[in-house]
Image (cartoon, rainbow, N blue to C red; front, side, top):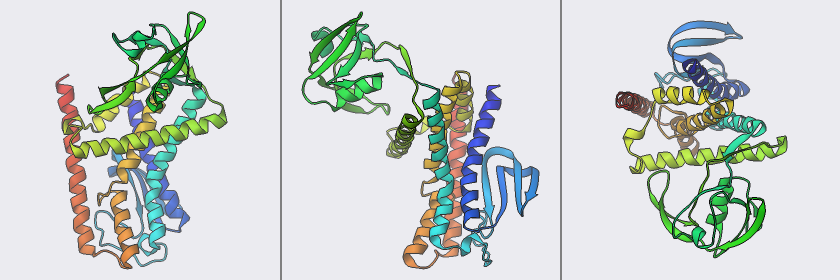
Length: 351
């Protein structure tokens, strides 16, 4: 069942990405010759209003084939008015951005749904107090629930972490201890800790850890908009930062995962309920949006760079250069795909 859910999630993500390109193309009057989910041999297709809607054998991607655009041969062009390459550069850029934009839009919708269903977070309840820490020195105890920090209401553990990190000097904590509300003044220490990328960073901390207690927060339809926006932006920044750390070598290349990892993790998430599945799907959708905007010739980002060149210099890039760069882009993508699949298999083999 998990495998079926994973395939459906991937197919839907691909469909939504290509739908962005498709709708933008149709809006600007570009004829779409084929809208395919998957690559390879077409196993099912139907022509509606001149567009072939197809499902292909390899469900690891998809594409919208527009008139006048052919990634397999960038030198093929059409001079018809409904051709992609005859549209103004700014319209082509919007068509190219349409796919990634729909990935971010889908993530927003998923986070919005999560907000309405109820988002799970750690409760601001102390589960551990480090020895010789400011928390211990000022009498904080396991089981204390943090209500406020510097008059700022604390609802989840992340609120607590952010409030401490953004504070200056001592902080006033309002805590609930077995039904009794107490006020405690604590002076955080700046300590060296490891971030999620394994880097050593300095943070203001008081020396407490969460109890693991979960609190579910539901939002009204208006509040859910802010929640969805913040989560989409947060996820986008995280993916961009991850790519940056990968290029810098902070994240080892062996940590890269491919389609097998995506299927495995999605299958696991589906077993933990709809909220977990929505969270992971939103993150994968943002991932697709960001990665497709990378300036690699075979991706949307690469085509955007070509089009920006045309806008700036008032002439298209040489066809031979585009052709060679596109081949190089495909070589990079296929190499990355093979490498990530190798990593996935190695992880499975090593347990």
